[in-house]
Amino acid sequence: MSSITLKGIRKVYPIADDIKKKKKGKKAPMPPQEGFVPNLQITEEGVVAVQDFNLEIKDKEFVVLVGPSGCGKSTTLRMIAGLEEITDGELYIGDKLSNAIAPRDRNIAMVFQNYSLYPHMTVSENMDFSLRLAKVGKETIAEKVMEAAKTLEITQILDRLPKALSGGQRQRVAIGRAIVRNPQVILMDEPLSNLDAKLRGQMRSEIIRLRQKIDTTFVYVTHDQVEAMTLGDRIVVMKDGFIQQVGTPQEVFNHPVNTFVAGFIGTPQINFFHNIPLTKEGDEYFITIQNRKIRLDDKHQKALKEKNQPGSSVTVGVRPVHISMAEEGFSGVIEVSEMMGSEVHLHINLNGDDIVAVIPTADLDLDLVAVGKKLTFSFNPRLIHIFDQESGENLI
Image (tube, rainbow, N blue to C red; front, side, top):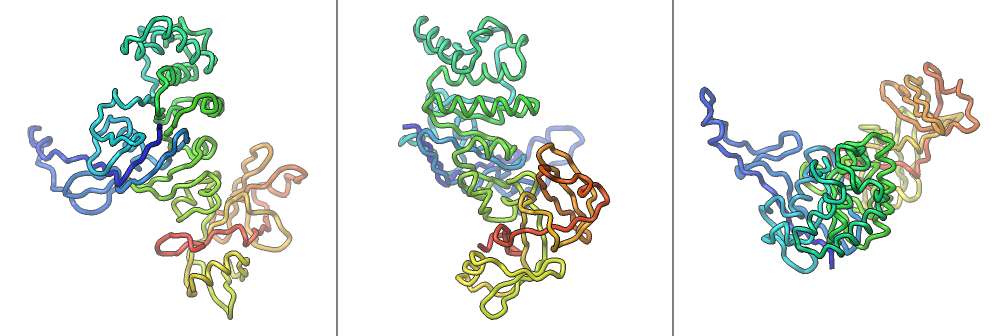
């Protein structure tokens, strides 16, 4: 079994008060203050990087931890690997409590952002290094290296040194070094971030194909939501050390639990209309945007009635792909027009708000979407998201 269970995991980095005291002319640091600083919480214990992390990863599942820099995703991955001590909580690999198990005894392989290849070793030697340390037989080593090289299509570079490889080839070697051991779990910490856009796309496809060929559990960390959406069976969205939402890519995209998830997942970013009146007239709910009254669809009506939601100010989210040109609706001036080939991304000034719309270019008169033109657009009320103005939580 290569399932992973994290129960109440917490990571705190203690603050060493004597570090600055040792430096001449430096004052001792102020005692930590309760409250939040960007991305991290400071308490009397120290800096809280991960807080109350609970997650069950199934055997052979591909789970992606995604979030902005400093949200705790890499720290969580390193705790699974045993490279960081767990302050509180329990980590199970299979059915075995693994908090105190040494990294080398966890049967886990890790692929790092910077490849971490030995520069004086050939590709083949880099890949078989862990097997040689384990004193595996030479014939078995040769078979395993060749099998991994064929899977990753790097058989032709086995005799080269890392300095003679491209970035994409180095990443393949790093992945090959991980899979040659047949580990229970493969951990990947932003493995594509050093590659250019074209190579990232190619390597995403390689990782998807690799996952189909080998039966193991993957935990993948990235700040790139495109990678998260394309690779993961489930994605875990994190912010400030806390899990915000866990779900399939489609669930998180279609039903974000709050404004943070809605804004983080999806490209281009979702449009937000803030301080929108939500009113109830008789048995029906309406929102009013830019003096246009919109009746909510039946799904929204049912959900709000079940909550007995009172009239209030809300935040309305509309994804750019759900905005379309129309004869009647909202009118604004196009300030930026980004041609993307099959679609054009329009930034529309709607009475001071920057609204982004994604319009397909097939059969589109491009003169209509030139900068400076006035554009009338609308959106389907069925596809909007309604969030509580204060908490940011999705009301539907």
